[in-house]
Length: 291
Image (cartoon, one colour):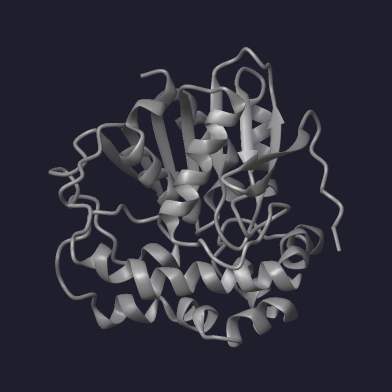
């Protein structure tokens, strides 16, 4: 069943086939304006950028795809290590005829953004990442406190369990409401995200996002897999001070690996920063892109 798309004034939609899968893409703004690629995270889709899109589209071409397995994009059974997502979006730039863009990402979209910057640095002018740790953690065992913050990932990754919970919808609602601290989602807004993940193929994809991370990506990340891959892109990370995903994250561990990266903590803000503080995100994006 194909669910109806929520509407945002001035935003159009199309499907683009890349690497054998169909990606849904929301677009707006003048076609000849500076292009910006916006990558969402879980458990969301392109619509999380609704307020940011409208504002940025005044003087930018905004491009907000649904990542594979989420929103209105295809949901293949495999291919959810985040380098696959990075390769999807590099291929999307090729399909759209865009040599170079600025990039904004949130959650897994920001993690994917880091990988795009490392894989194809010539394609990205500036990178604004929201609500995600950087990818150069110190080589040490994660603390029990840090591991306890990943409880929902273990639940989601469990075979059969995560998929079933997504189809019920309550876990999605809990994650969205618990991790947002500035303002609240309306019932309508919650339903835009919950309803998509109730679909069997998207429920399975959600589980695969976290299964792939825990089984194939977490250990290399914690062991310093990216310590020999420095970041050259001018980058700003925005972290909400109340974001449960970022508790204990430090702002001074990255200098040797990402000298062009700055980190700003946003007071009284939770995990869903582009929805909690859309005006601030746009303001910081404009300032970064002008550098």
